[in-house]
Image (cartoon, rainbow, N blue to C red; front, side, top):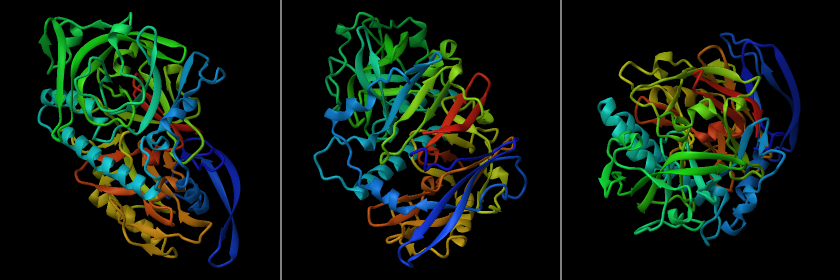
Length: 501
């Protein structure tokens, strides 16, 4: 989202106030009122009165963004042109991130409603996949299933939401990859390919890379893949999922290039037979917490730290992804990173409660806690779009929001959303502030267009949260948009802000 429109309120143990004045107009009544917004950073107290109870949603701008036409793949490379001033600064490598809906791989007429329903369809599959993984038996069994679902999750499970461009091999061949904070593998389609889905760039050919080196069956890398096989001395993997998606291929060590940074001997999956859809991307860049992810393999070089900022499809700006401890920002609100031995791939955080306006929603903290069996808890996930909360928490949260938006005209539910509004004819509306209370004191108040989103181009907006079919909570990418998020695995912290995108 544009920096001038973003509202980020972080309540930490500091005292700082920044006032931003805005004006709201409603065309249906031909009246206007002036409202002042404050970005407050101050000490957390019991009542959520240290920041504004309400903020403005710019309806006109949100609807204008729904009409933004995605670019064609032929224009896609323009999004990733390197700017010498921002690709590397102070030893930090910054890559551009683009939402998949910003690019069209179809000749069909663009329709926001169609794009929205497709995104929700992917999202339902993604959430079902995560819950399946986290409800599976023992830790050892989980690790086997984890490797499998990680690889295919970017196809039909909906993890392919954000693209990054990297170089693969020597000399480097540029490829579009999707990032996934819940995946533990770097994977790409390879020649010879007996079955591959469509991608924008030519298939990667290992024969053209001087640095490609197959992994033997006796190597330590092959040992880390519990469901690996062996064929002619080469380590092979074959991963399938219940919906029929799969990938088969060989493991290899290869060189990856990020802008001007070269990383050698990265273990990747080289898929020769793949079924699924990355919507034009060549594969997956896993950023999970497991040993086979990009972060796990390069922990010594990156300090087990990365930072990212996601932007939505309708904006004209790009998000970013940075690696290394030097990318950790000064001034962020830091909260503890929670570990789940049963799910080492995922980044858990400790959420204590929810707020709407000046009210803290009456929900027990226990609803959001990770128990000793590895169930429940709150996962941050770049591949899930919509934030999910256990039903008891979601219903209390939703009801509090409805109670404070009685002045807005309601609309029927749409897709997975049960709380929607008809904002046709409005330029902007006043909505209650939505807040997350975290362990250690910080309170994150998210921008209005991160929780009330357009589902068509006719003025229907919905409260962008949904109940979880289990005890698991998921902080999705819609609620993460526009806010810099930093993961410092080495020191076990997650940071919000201070930058926006």
